[in-house]
Image 1 (tube, rainbow, N blue to C red):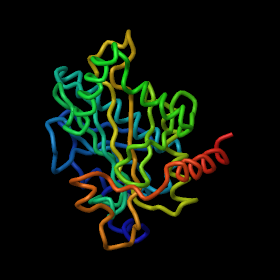
Image 2 (cartoon, rainbow, N blue to C red):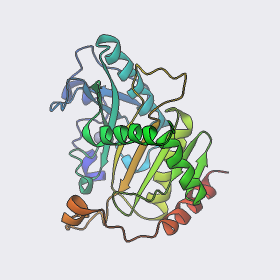
Image 3 (cartoon, rainbow, N blue to C red):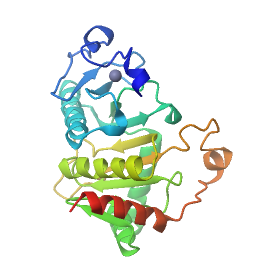
Length: 272
Ligand SMILES: [Zn+2]
Protein backbone atom coordinates (compact mmCIF):
# COMPACT_ATOMS: atom_id res chain seq x y z
CA UNK A 1 0.00 0.00 0.00
CA UNK A 2 2.80 2.42 0.95
CA UNK A 3 4.85 1.51 -2.13
CA UNK A 4 1.92 2.18 -4.47
CA UNK A 5 1.43 5.73 -3.10
CA UNK A 6 4.77 6.86 -4.57
CA UNK A 7 3.78 7.20 -8.23
CA UNK A 8 0.03 7.23 -7.86
CA UNK A 9 -1.93 9.02 -10.61
CA UNK A 10 -4.88 9.59 -8.27
CA UNK A 11 -3.07 11.02 -5.23
CA UNK A 12 -2.76 14.72 -4.33
CA UNK A 13 -3.29 16.96 -7.35
CA UNK A 14 -1.83 14.45 -9.84
CA UNK A 15 -5.28 13.54 -11.07
CA UNK A 16 -5.79 16.98 -12.63
CA UNK A 17 -3.16 16.12 -15.23
CA UNK A 18 -3.29 12.35 -15.26
CA UNK A 19 -7.03 11.69 -15.58
CA UNK A 20 -9.69 12.81 -18.07
CA UNK A 21 -13.04 14.45 -17.39
CA UNK A 22 -16.52 13.34 -18.38
CA UNK A 23 -18.22 15.17 -21.27
CA UNK A 24 -20.02 17.38 -18.72
CA UNK A 25 -16.82 18.05 -16.75
CA UNK A 26 -15.47 16.82 -13.45
CA UNK A 27 -17.50 16.63 -10.27
CA UNK A 28 -15.60 17.33 -7.06
CA UNK A 29 -16.34 17.10 -3.37
CA UNK A 30 -14.08 17.64 -0.38
CA UNK A 31 -13.18 13.96 0.01
CA UNK A 32 -13.64 12.59 -3.52
CA UNK A 33 -13.76 13.46 -7.24
CA UNK A 34 -14.80 11.90 -10.54
CA UNK A 35 -12.45 10.85 -13.35
CA UNK A 36 -13.54 9.58 -16.76
CA UNK A 37 -12.33 6.03 -17.27
CA UNK A 38 -9.92 5.53 -20.17
CA UNK A 39 -11.57 2.14 -20.67
CA UNK A 40 -15.25 2.94 -20.36
CA UNK A 41 -17.42 -0.13 -20.19
CA UNK A 42 -20.58 1.76 -20.99
CA UNK A 43 -21.85 5.02 -22.49
CA UNK A 44 -22.37 6.43 -18.99
CA UNK A 45 -19.53 5.19 -16.84
CA UNK A 46 -17.11 7.00 -14.55
CA UNK A 47 -14.68 6.53 -11.69
CA UNK A 48 -15.44 7.86 -8.25
CA UNK A 49 -12.04 8.41 -6.66
CA UNK A 50 -11.50 9.00 -2.95
CA UNK A 51 -8.85 11.50 -1.91
CA UNK A 52 -7.63 8.76 0.46
CA UNK A 53 -5.36 6.28 -1.31
CA UNK A 54 -5.81 3.54 1.29
CA UNK A 55 -9.05 1.64 0.63
CA UNK A 56 -8.65 -0.46 3.76
CA UNK A 57 -8.64 2.52 6.13
CA UNK A 58 -11.32 4.91 4.92
CA UNK A 59 -13.26 6.89 7.48
CA UNK A 60 -17.05 6.76 7.50
CA UNK A 61 -17.08 10.30 6.06
CA UNK A 62 -14.72 9.31 3.24
CA UNK A 63 -16.94 6.34 2.37
CA UNK A 64 -20.08 8.50 2.50
CA UNK A 65 -18.52 11.23 0.37
CA UNK A 66 -17.83 8.79 -2.48
CA UNK A 67 -21.42 7.54 -2.52
CA UNK A 68 -22.85 11.06 -2.27
CA UNK A 69 -20.69 11.97 -5.26
CA UNK A 70 -21.90 8.87 -7.11
CA UNK A 71 -25.50 9.99 -6.53
CA UNK A 72 -24.65 13.47 -7.90
CA UNK A 73 -23.08 11.88 -10.97
CA UNK A 74 -26.13 9.62 -11.55
CA UNK A 75 -28.44 12.65 -11.40
CA UNK A 76 -26.21 14.64 -13.72
CA UNK A 77 -26.01 11.86 -16.31
CA UNK A 78 -29.75 11.13 -16.02
CA UNK A 79 -30.59 14.84 -16.46
CA UNK A 80 -28.64 14.86 -19.75
CA UNK A 81 -30.04 11.56 -21.01
CA UNK A 82 -33.22 10.69 -19.10
CA UNK A 83 -33.56 7.33 -20.85
CA UNK A 84 -30.55 6.13 -18.84
CA UNK A 85 -32.02 5.14 -15.50
CA UNK A 86 -30.35 2.09 -13.93
CA UNK A 87 -27.56 2.98 -11.44
CA UNK A 88 -24.93 0.34 -10.68
CA UNK A 89 -21.54 0.36 -8.94
CA UNK A 90 -18.59 -1.93 -8.49
CA UNK A 91 -15.54 -1.63 -6.28
CA UNK A 92 -12.46 -3.87 -6.14
CA UNK A 93 -9.72 -3.48 -3.55
CA UNK A 94 -6.19 -4.88 -3.78
CA UNK A 95 -4.81 -7.03 -6.63
CA UNK A 96 -6.37 -10.24 -5.28
CA UNK A 97 -9.78 -8.85 -6.22
CA UNK A 98 -8.72 -7.88 -9.75
CA UNK A 99 -8.30 -4.18 -8.96
CA UNK A 100 -6.09 -2.47 -11.57
CA UNK A 101 -5.21 0.52 -9.34
CA UNK A 102 -4.43 0.40 -5.63
CA UNK A 103 -5.87 3.87 -5.02
CA UNK A 104 -9.48 3.82 -3.72
CA UNK A 105 -11.87 4.01 -6.66
CA UNK A 106 -15.44 2.96 -7.37
CA UNK A 107 -16.73 2.37 -10.88
CA UNK A 108 -20.24 3.60 -11.50
CA UNK A 109 -22.47 3.25 -14.53
CA UNK A 110 -25.97 4.20 -15.56
CA UNK A 111 -27.73 1.60 -17.70
CA UNK A 112 -30.27 2.16 -20.46
CA UNK A 113 -33.56 0.79 -19.12
CA UNK A 114 -32.10 -2.51 -17.87
CA UNK A 115 -29.30 -3.49 -15.51
CA UNK A 116 -26.38 -5.75 -16.30
CA UNK A 117 -27.18 -9.46 -16.46
CA UNK A 118 -26.42 -10.51 -12.90
CA UNK A 119 -28.59 -7.76 -11.45
CA UNK A 120 -31.29 -8.03 -14.11
CA UNK A 121 -31.69 -11.77 -13.35
CA UNK A 122 -32.37 -10.93 -9.70
CA UNK A 123 -34.82 -8.22 -10.76
CA UNK A 124 -36.66 -10.60 -13.08
CA UNK A 125 -36.62 -13.28 -10.38
CA UNK A 126 -38.18 -10.78 -7.98
CA UNK A 127 -40.94 -10.05 -10.52
CA UNK A 128 -41.63 -13.74 -10.98
CA UNK A 129 -41.69 -14.18 -7.18
CA UNK A 130 -44.30 -11.40 -6.90
CA UNK A 131 -46.38 -12.99 -9.67
CA UNK A 132 -46.63 -16.37 -7.94
CA UNK A 133 -46.95 -14.95 -4.38
CA UNK A 134 -49.79 -12.42 -4.65
CA UNK A 135 -47.52 -9.47 -5.27
CA UNK A 136 -45.19 -10.02 -2.30
CA UNK A 137 -41.89 -8.14 -2.50
CA UNK A 138 -39.03 -10.61 -2.91
CA UNK A 139 -36.47 -8.41 -1.16
CA UNK A 140 -38.70 -7.82 1.86
CA UNK A 141 -39.24 -11.57 2.20
CA UNK A 142 -35.52 -12.21 1.69
CA UNK A 143 -34.85 -9.90 4.61
CA UNK A 144 -37.68 -11.39 6.77
CA UNK A 145 -36.41 -14.93 6.42
CA UNK A 146 -32.91 -13.89 7.45
CA UNK A 147 -34.36 -11.97 10.39
CA UNK A 148 -36.28 -15.09 11.41
CA UNK A 149 -33.06 -17.11 11.17
CA UNK A 150 -31.15 -14.56 13.25
CA UNK A 151 -28.68 -13.59 10.53
CA UNK A 152 -29.29 -9.83 10.31
CA UNK A 153 -27.75 -6.85 12.11
CA UNK A 154 -29.81 -3.63 11.96
CA UNK A 155 -27.89 -0.35 11.64
CA UNK A 156 -30.50 2.41 11.77
CA UNK A 157 -32.58 2.07 8.59
CA UNK A 158 -30.44 -0.60 6.90
CA UNK A 159 -29.58 -4.24 7.56
CA UNK A 160 -26.34 -6.15 7.35
CA UNK A 161 -27.12 -9.77 6.38
CA UNK A 162 -24.89 -12.85 6.63
CA UNK A 163 -27.05 -14.33 3.85
CA UNK A 164 -27.56 -17.99 3.01
CA UNK A 165 -26.69 -17.67 -0.68
CA UNK A 166 -23.24 -16.06 -0.79
CA UNK A 167 -20.97 -16.24 -3.82
CA UNK A 168 -18.12 -17.25 -1.48
CA UNK A 169 -17.54 -17.75 2.27
CA UNK A 170 -16.87 -14.15 3.25
CA UNK A 171 -19.74 -12.44 1.45
CA UNK A 172 -22.20 -10.20 3.27
CA UNK A 173 -25.04 -7.98 2.11
CA UNK A 174 -26.43 -4.59 3.07
CA UNK A 175 -30.05 -3.82 2.18
CA UNK A 176 -31.91 -0.56 2.69
CA UNK A 177 -34.54 1.65 1.09
CA UNK A 178 -32.16 4.55 0.50
CA UNK A 179 -28.46 5.10 -0.01
CA UNK A 180 -27.82 7.32 3.01
CA UNK A 181 -25.75 7.66 6.18
CA UNK A 182 -26.82 4.39 7.80
CA UNK A 183 -25.56 2.61 4.70
CA UNK A 184 -22.16 4.31 5.02
CA UNK A 185 -22.04 3.47 8.70
CA UNK A 186 -22.83 -0.20 8.03
CA UNK A 187 -20.18 -0.38 5.33
CA UNK A 188 -17.60 1.24 7.59
CA UNK A 189 -18.39 -1.22 10.42
CA UNK A 190 -18.05 -4.16 8.00
CA UNK A 191 -14.67 -2.89 6.76
CA UNK A 192 -13.35 -2.38 10.29
CA UNK A 193 -14.50 -5.83 11.40
CA UNK A 194 -13.01 -7.65 8.40
CA UNK A 195 -9.78 -5.65 8.16
CA UNK A 196 -8.98 -5.08 11.86
CA UNK A 197 -10.50 -8.18 13.49
CA UNK A 198 -10.42 -10.86 10.80
CA UNK A 199 -7.27 -9.67 8.94
CA UNK A 200 -8.91 -9.72 5.51
CA UNK A 201 -7.45 -7.17 3.10
CA UNK A 202 -9.05 -7.56 -0.30
CA UNK A 203 -12.66 -7.35 -1.43
CA UNK A 204 -15.00 -7.07 -4.39
CA UNK A 205 -18.21 -5.11 -4.09
CA UNK A 206 -21.31 -4.71 -6.25
CA UNK A 207 -24.30 -2.46 -5.71
CA UNK A 208 -27.48 -1.40 -7.45
CA UNK A 209 -29.90 1.43 -6.72
CA UNK A 210 -33.58 1.53 -7.74
CA UNK A 211 -34.28 2.80 -11.28
CA UNK A 212 -34.24 6.61 -11.33
CA UNK A 213 -37.59 6.91 -13.11
CA UNK A 214 -39.46 4.59 -10.73
CA UNK A 215 -42.41 5.88 -8.75
CA UNK A 216 -41.81 5.28 -5.05
CA UNK A 217 -45.44 5.52 -3.95
CA UNK A 218 -45.67 1.75 -3.41
CA UNK A 219 -42.12 1.29 -2.20
CA UNK A 220 -39.32 0.11 -4.44
CA UNK A 221 -39.45 -3.05 -6.48
CA UNK A 222 -35.68 -3.07 -6.03
CA UNK A 223 -34.21 -1.71 -2.81
CA UNK A 224 -30.68 -0.37 -2.50
CA UNK A 225 -28.61 -3.48 -2.12
CA UNK A 226 -24.93 -4.27 -2.06
CA UNK A 227 -22.96 -7.48 -1.83
CA UNK A 228 -19.40 -7.49 -0.62
CA UNK A 229 -17.07 -10.49 -0.66
CA UNK A 230 -13.65 -10.57 0.96
CA UNK A 231 -11.12 -12.35 -1.27
CA UNK A 232 -8.59 -14.52 0.49
CA UNK A 233 -5.91 -15.33 1.35
CA UNK A 234 -4.75 -11.97 0.03
CA UNK A 235 -1.13 -13.04 -0.63
CA UNK A 236 -1.94 -16.50 -1.98
CA UNK A 237 -1.19 -17.02 -5.66
CA UNK A 238 -3.96 -19.58 -5.87
CA UNK A 239 -7.33 -18.13 -6.93
CA UNK A 240 -10.15 -18.09 -4.38
CA UNK A 241 -12.73 -19.38 -6.88
CA UNK A 242 -12.55 -22.32 -9.25
CA UNK A 243 -14.68 -24.23 -11.72
CA UNK A 244 -17.04 -25.48 -9.04
CA UNK A 245 -17.85 -21.94 -7.92
CA UNK A 246 -18.00 -20.55 -11.43
CA UNK A 247 -19.93 -23.28 -13.19
CA UNK A 248 -21.75 -25.47 -10.68
CA UNK A 249 -22.56 -23.91 -7.33
CA UNK A 250 -20.64 -21.71 -4.89
CA UNK A 251 -18.63 -23.82 -2.45
CA UNK A 252 -19.10 -22.45 1.05
CA UNK A 253 -16.90 -23.79 3.85
CA UNK A 254 -17.72 -21.27 6.56
CA UNK A 255 -20.81 -21.64 8.72
CA UNK A 256 -23.01 -18.57 8.26
CA UNK A 257 -23.66 -18.42 12.01
CA UNK A 258 -19.91 -18.32 12.73
CA UNK A 259 -19.53 -15.43 10.28
CA UNK A 260 -22.62 -13.76 11.73
CA UNK A 261 -21.20 -14.03 15.27
CA UNK A 262 -17.88 -12.49 14.19
CA UNK A 263 -19.68 -9.66 12.42
CA UNK A 264 -22.03 -9.10 15.33
CA UNK A 265 -19.13 -8.84 17.79
CA UNK A 266 -17.15 -6.51 15.51
CA UNK A 267 -20.13 -4.28 14.86
CA UNK A 268 -21.43 -4.20 18.43
CA UNK A 269 -18.15 -3.15 20.04
CA UNK A 270 -17.84 -0.23 17.58
CA UNK A 271 -21.48 0.81 17.32
CA UNK A 272 -23.27 1.36 20.61
ZN1 LIG B 1 -3.14 7.21 -4.60
